[in-house]
Length: 468
Image 1 (cartoon, rainbow, N blue to C red):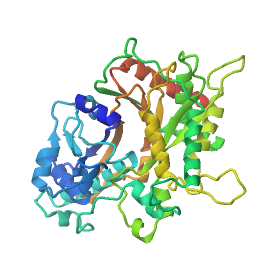
Image 2 (image 1 turned 90 degrees about the vertical axis):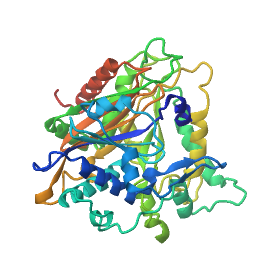
Image 3 (image 1 turned 30 degrees about the horizontal axis):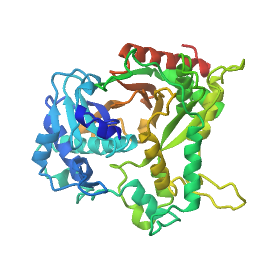
Image 4 (image 1 turned 90 degrees about the horizontal axis):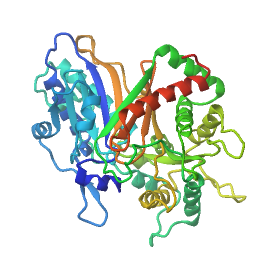
C-alpha cells in the first residue's frame, strides 16, 4: 500500500529510525571501527537485517542469503560528517533494500534504520540492546579483528529468520486453519466487531494540513520533539497513578484535545484511530514449546487496537469530553487483556485472544487502509500515538566493564511518514518524558507541528494538574 506507493519517491512509509547517543571511554578518539564490528555482529545475530523481499511468487517472502561481513559494512554502514544530529539526518535518507546504520561523529549518535515491515519499535530497542552489548565487547577487545564468536560468546551460530506474527499466531491458535481457507465464524465475528469499533468514529477529527496540499506529492519527512524534565515527569507520573491511568493514555488524551481544538469537517465528531500494541507477551503466554524459542527481536510482532472516543467536539449545546474522560476511554483500550480479549454475545464461556483473530483481523484492516476515502468525507489526517514506555525496560545506561564502559546517554525514535497524518511517539529515558512527532513536509510545516507539540505538553500538564 503506502510502502509500495513510496517506491517512485525512493521513500517508504513508517520506515523506523532509532538514534543512540553514545559515550566512549576517554582513551577512544576514533570509535568507527568498534561501531562497525558491532554492526557486523548484529547482522550475524539477526540475519533478517539483511533480508530482502522476494515478490516473484503470489505470496511475497523474506530471503536472506549469506553476506560477507566486510561487504555488509561497506554496503550498509556510513559515516555522516555533514549532519550535526540524527534529526538533521532524518529527512535526507532514502529507501534501502536492507537495514542500514549511520554514525554521526558530531553528535556521537548511531542511527539504525529499517523498513517497518522488518521490525517494530519494541524490536528496534531490543535490537539496540544487542548492538550496545556487541559494541561494549568490541571495545573490551580493543578493536582488534576478533572473530564474531569472541565478541558474542552467547551466540555461536546465526539465528534463522524468525517466524512471522501470523505464523506464530496460527501455530498457537486453538482454531487451526481450514483446508479451504474459509474463516471460522467465531473468528470472523470477532474481527468484524473490532473493525466496527473503529468505523463507529469515522470520519475522525484531524490536524490542519498546509493550504493547497490536497494534491501534493509526499516529500521528505520532518520531526520535532519536546522533553519534560525529571521533576515535571515525576509529577505527571504521580498524577496518572493517582487517577489509575498510564502516562501513555494521558499523553494520548492531550493529543486528542489539541486536535479537537482546531476547526473540523462538519462530519467529524469523534476521534477514531488504531493504537499499536506489542504482542510479544501474549505470544509468550500462549507459546508452544516449539514457538517459545523463536527470536522475536527482528520482526513485526504488534497489532493495532481500534479506539473510538466520541463527544470530543462540543455539539448540540453539550460540552466536549474532559481530558480525564478522554484519558479513561483510552486507558480502557490500552488496558485490554490481549489473551482473554473477546467473547461472543452469547452465554458461552469461550474467550478469544487477539492472536486467535490475527489473520482475519489483518485481512480486514488491510482492506480498510487500502480503500478510498468515501465521497463527502474529509481526507484522513488523524494524529496517532506509539509509545515505548520506560526505555530502561529494554536498554541499560551502561554497557561493559569498568575498563571498557560504554555509556548510552540518550535515545530518539522517529518514523518516515508519507500520508497526511502526524505520528506522535512518547517514551521516558533517565526519568524524563519525551513526546516526539513525525510528519511529511509536503503536508505540514515544521513550525506548526512544533507549536502543536508545545500545546500537547500544556494540555498534558493542565490535565494532570501540574504547574508549567
